[in-house]
Each structure stands twice: as structure tokens, then as C-alpha cells.
Image (cartoon, rainbow, N blue to C red; front, side):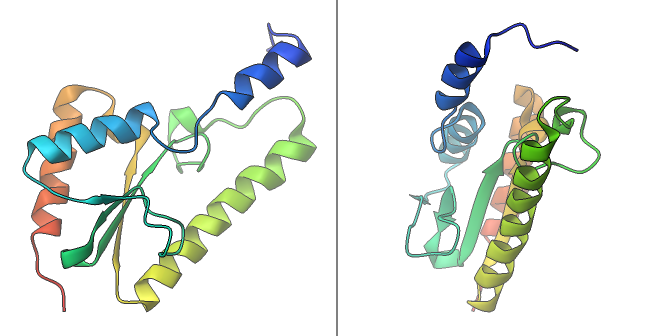
Length: 142
């Protein structure tokens, strides 16, 4: 499939992709807050700066985009068809970093959870996933 954008337009488009406050992250935050969950955002003192942190429960939650973090088996995590020499290593590094961050947090005694973009595609799925999160977060951790 040929890219419909010029190289300059594509670069400008990619620059606008945000690291924090993404649509999926905001949706999870709104739903979690509505469910009565209270959390901190982007704790930079923790490895990977988790999207939502439940300090009293020692739980870190990441909201991952399926493409950027290569959600295994997901239709949204397709490999790009151009510039494979760039995208292959980049996406592989993202996955490796996710695994390292998770292991580091677990070594520090934190429980790590991940919500994938495809898991919250509609409001019913989002509500169900937030209920699962609430059930796990409410478990008191030592």
C-alpha cells in the first residue's frame, strides 16, 4: 500500500503523536475515576513512568497503543510496509523496554498491569476492563 502523504506531511503527522494524554489513556482515566478509583499520573520516580499509579496498592498501570507496543496477535499492530530498517528495530526496542520496565517494577514490589488500545475499543469493553482493574487494584499489597 502506497502512503498517500508526502514525506514532509508524514513527518508532521508523526510529530503530533503524543506520549502522554493519548485518547486511550484519557478514556481509561475517565472510566477509572468514574468507578471510584483514585490514582497518580506519570510518576517519574518509577521505572517507565506508568500512566496511572495506585500508590497505596503498589500497582502501576500502562495504557499501550497496539501499534507502538506491538500487541501480539492484534490487528492494530501491523508492521509498516516502508522503511523496515527503521521500524523493525524501533518497535522491537519498544517491546524490549516494556519488558525491562515491567521486570524493574516487579523487583521493586509493584504489581504491573497493561491495558491495550484494542481492549477498550468501545464503551462496553472499556467498562468491563476498568471493572477488572478495580477488582485487582482493590487487593491490598504488602
